[in-house]
Amino acid sequence: MKVDHPQAVYEAPIDFSAHTMTEINRVIGLFPEGKQKSAILSILHLVQDEFGWVSVGAMNRVAQILGIEPIEVYEVATFYTMFHLDPVGKNVLEVCRTGPCQLVGSDDLIAYIEEKLNIKVGETTKDGLFTLKTVECLGACGYGPMLMCKYQFYERLTKEKVNEMLDAMRAASKS
Amino acid sequence: MARKLLIEHAEVPGIAAYDVYRKHGGYASVEKALKTMSPDEIVEEVKKSGLRGRGGAGFPTGMKWSFLAKPEGIERHLVCNADESEPGTFKDRYLMEKLPHLLIEGMITSSYALGARRSYIYIRGEFMYILRILEKAIAEAYANGMLGKNILGSGYDLDLVVTPGGGAYICGEETALLESLEGKRGNPRMKPPFPAVKGLWGNPTVVNNVESIAAVVPIVNEGGEAYAAIGIERSTGTKLISASGNLVRPGVYEIDLGLSVEEFIYGDDYCRGIPNGKKLKACVPGGSSVPILPHYLVTKTAAGTDRLMTYESLADGGFATGSMLGSGGFIVFDEDQCIVRNTWNFARFYAHESCGQCSPCREGTGWMEKVLYRLEHGQGTLEDISLLEEINKKIEGNTICPLGDAAAWPVAAAIRHFRDEFEWHVKAPQEAQTRNYGLIQAPLEA
Ligand SMILES: Cc1cc2nc3c(=O)[nH]c(=O)nc-3n(C[C@H](O)[C@H](O)[C@H](O)COP(=O)(O)O)c2cc1C
Ligand code: FES
Image: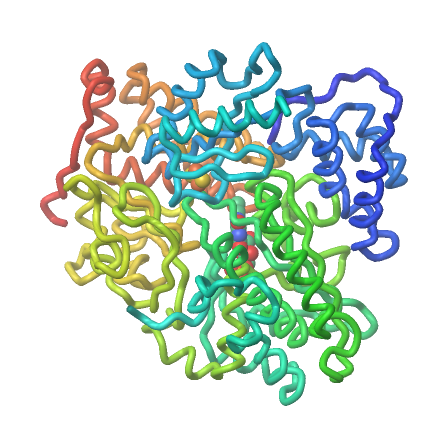
């Protein structure tokens, strides 16, 4: 159960890109007539892909698209941990902290990234490039310690691999 | 090395593509089933195979299928549970990433057996890259007439959709999964009614794990009896084991059920023992929810017989001295690991993942985490250990879904077997911060 929640202020629905809208219509079409709400998690992923996070305005727009009440979107978005309900850095590093990863050094990995980026878990670097989060088991336990960023898994991480990964992400964010 | 019924071709280059998969015998079960077998005949073969659900509970798949309600004019569904969120478990990911068509083939054959014409694969959102692999494979299956209308001229129609979760362990529980698939919060439903009667959108539904569905392919191809010939007792066939923790070679292995635990941990074909010459301290053999075993109960049962990788042998001794095969998430701890720390870690996991519906689970998991945090950080008391046992009893059996039990059992087992280590954390808090307790001694009678 996630505890953060959207602010209780009204925000006007925002528009999504043409690409996002095409994809939204595709995933809605995967479900039978009258069951469009089943596409809601797919849609929230698509929205987050476009904006990096899910704002109240975006959720209000999702509600319009699905023809449901905004609360039905909020209650879903607040339940599932993958959705960021506040702005985040360009690269969200989600480090697994659960048992099997801890056995092979996830605590050290987290400490090392904190030191390298000079932020604590939950924080974003000043340049807005990185947010560090911890998450529970990502189904990669035999390949720990590991983290996920933009749906990509970085496994069997060492200090060297983390350095390379951060450099590559910095370079990609510049171009 | 033992035979592989599921992942034999996993490392064949290009096997994720339809043509390559087909060249290696893929989709034979669909041809056999749709052209030569009635749905009931398939259910019979699955019953004969003795296949038990690979998602964790080990419920006989054939029996589950025969419970599916079949009222006239009402749609039925097969839903594949690809949520794979039990810590220590990563086998379904391997299977789907390498062999997406094996899962799709199993979905077609199984859906036909159940009379489902609209089936779903619900995959955890973090596996988005695998969802893409599956989407591509599903499109290929449609293009080759294995999905859609009138499959292989049989008159049978099937639509298959893969859809993501959003990050919530509880959505691996089958009724929470169905809620999530309906676009809601993942709050488990009261049972009865069971999904077999009222499942997705109120329609009769079978929910099966990825590996269970994949196993239907060799069962239909070779026959239920051939499958049942592998393994021992009521543990038939092969099983994917996810091995993690302190092992030389962690990873996914397909084993014949009945392999000895000793061979699995130390054998050359499997995990090759513990790195850096360290000793085995403990093992959680079936995913984070099952009881932990101290080193002296891992390769031998309390009765002194060899412990085997089967549902029965891993459970030998009940909760007093045994554990469970569960999802096959096999987690190994070396002598440097702290049991209190690990128990706290798992308690934190369950507190984080409780859906919050039932007070005993919502509050109890939070309490357990706090108390274990105290113990691990040198602030605990001896009463805290009894308090944990009290909280445990208040959660166990008092919740809508088994997440509460899953949270309570590991704590109970850790205290049962490692009480001395817990007490040492209270009596020598300074020392406990600087060194590890080491191996626990076997009680004299064990
Ligand atoms: C808290 C909880 C989490 C679960 N997670 C999973 C999971 O990730 N994958 C899975 O296949 N089954 C999981 N299960 C078991 C399912 O409820 C269900 O028994 C299973 O999908 C049935 O499939 P099977 O009979 O083929 O094993 C979980 C159960 C509980 C109580
Ligand atoms: S414990 Fe880290 S991926 Fe499973």
